[in-house]
Length: 285
Image (cartoon, rainbow, N blue to C red; front, side, top):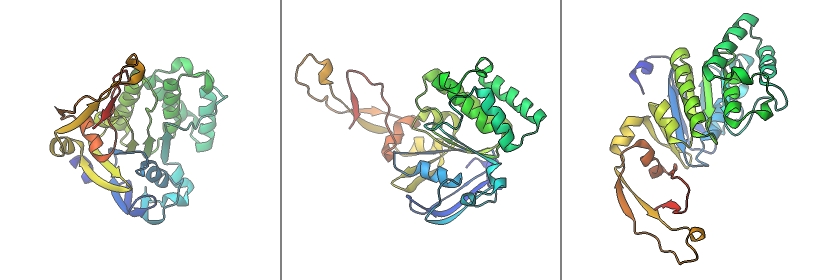
């Protein structure tokens, strides 16, 4: 944990929490962005849903801003926010600005504060020209920017970001990452981020938690894992028959590469290995 956050009272405190995972524990302090990574089915989204009050755990304890999340007290819900990259929270047929006005009433945000916050977020994300466009007519990147605005309008102290850049092009991913980093530095919420893109983790998180089959197998600095856990991995390449004019294919012999970036280490824990798709069809060895 970053020493600047270690002496601050945690906003998220979990002890021996169980559901589809086996007794996990963690603390997240103000200003931290903790990266939660692991293979599909490792329990990342389930943990986020429990901490956001959507799902009940089997056993264990959790406190978010002093509240038990699954009791869903109004005071708790007013201070947290959840973005799920694969699920929209905005109303599909309404313009973005109308959605924001509805959220203003739901959260009872004073008019002056609402206008100041909205103007700041809209300017930071560069979506001034899309406010009167129906959500369904926006590009995927524009929609995610609107989702972030909706999420942050009420100044949440704890933010859960579940794959916020999924499906976005590289330019949109970069814009979202830059915004999240700047917002975190300025407002100091406690953030848990899940992602299958290591660029998100490398850019935003100094601390990561790796989940494998329902357990935390690592919780610590990102820099430490890249320097100590592995320097090599095996990559096997096979020709794709569809691009080989009907000729029989043989796998290339495995080659060893010196890999030192954090993104190259993730597959050690069954996280992922990302290569450009194409006629060579790379796969893990």
